[in-house]
Length: 319
Image 1 (cartoon, one colour):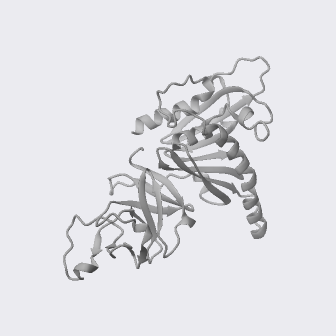
Image 2 (cartoon, one colour):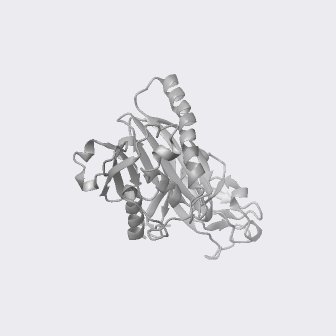
Image 3 (cartoon, rainbow, N blue to C red):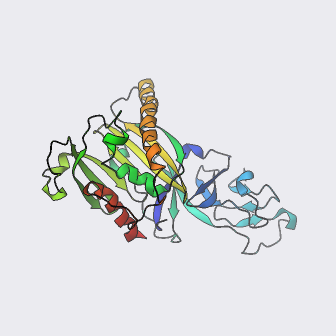
């Protein structure tokens, strides 16, 4: 995992008031809960006393109570009460578990993956999705490393083959470019695919007025959007569970329908088509080896793979 990054880890609706949520993220067993101010907290899901799962316990005010012997933990992972020792007994400093800084924003829960608790940047999110859009979505787990799931969405070559009955039905197999641009940790890639009429694909620097082309974006470390139009976007967050599993959060964002009942209907019904597209991808991605991608692995990449190459380079730079 890349340190010093905000990772999307959960849908905000998954963390309910007065309920503990135990999940594995970034290969660590974690427990999330909301305190009395509705703020989300996160500590390791293992009691420092006898190793019981804290997520099997309960929320007591702003704290988590272990189900085994009633040890009470605060949001920093410190034990603040050991019932068997009485309220007045001092608690040694080693009675604690690790914690993470987490925040709720844009309908998701984000985890700051770092030892640095002071110099924390803003949560990176697509600026144009912050206002004016409503959405519908779903999530599902894939038995793949999160890098493979991400690279599938950076792949501009696969559409006429994986999605030949849906979004790739126009048979645009020839890949010009693509053009890839970075702004800090935000990648924008511009797509200019065409039918193969015998021409040689254009190099990225041969494509003029690329800003006018259809484009997609990827924000490090784990969110992506398909900029279908000014009023329609497809969003995906790739929450790393462990080295072999990823939770994908897919959303359909739209701003063209604002009538309450109709917009909910449109947002909800979008899940049907998006799930079909995602499952077409899934059939192939699950077959890829090795399960985790790296900059240098036994693959022979082509010009059309430039967004994937750039993603791998950026991961190596940030690690």
